[in-house]
Image 1 (cartoon, rainbow, N blue to C red):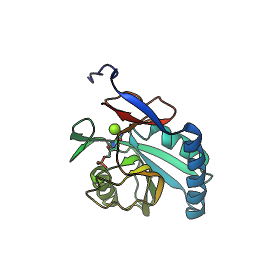
Image 2 (tube, rainbow, N blue to C red):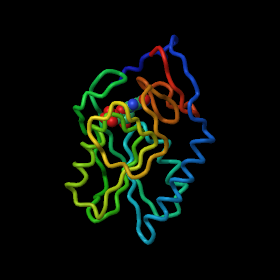
Image 3 (cartoon, helix red, strand yellow):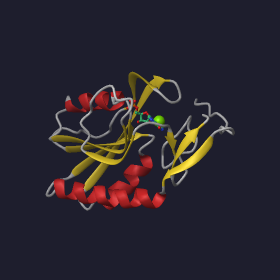
Image 4 (tube, protein in one colour):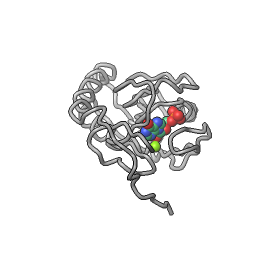
Length: 182
Ligand code: IMP
Ligand code: MG
């Protein structure tokens, strides 16, 4: 059983990317994805839990026929930094062999989570494998993961909202906010 911590009363939230900006950027990404996948079907592999809202919006914005499946990865570490030890908590239910797979991530930070997922999926022989992330954080990159579609780029800072959490809190905020004092 998961224990939920009480919301952090001392943390302050500063809006960084508004819901309108997110929606507009998703439309742009969807246009590019449609151009790149003409005549194909996409299998979106969304990484739980952080990408659940992003994939829900993106899959409705693309016109390319698309199906979706989910993986859950857990990376041990502190609340705000990844350790690099990545555990597969929930595997895909669909086979990805010979399919056009598009990984949907919330944030690439160190790159370790994504790199571990990418090599696991490549072993299953998809027809193609690309990566789409809502946020590309650049300051703490340890592994260069080849990201094909990026929503927004930032250097550092911890963000919450629009599916992104701190200790399971704040996923339901419509905007993406910088959190300080956490
Ligand atoms: P990485 O393995 O360091 O690239 O960590 C990526 C994962 O850490 C993301 O999929 C997020 O779940 C989480 N993460 C990294 N930075 C943040 C953040 O600012 N807010 C919320 N989650 C984050
Ligand atoms: Mg997370």
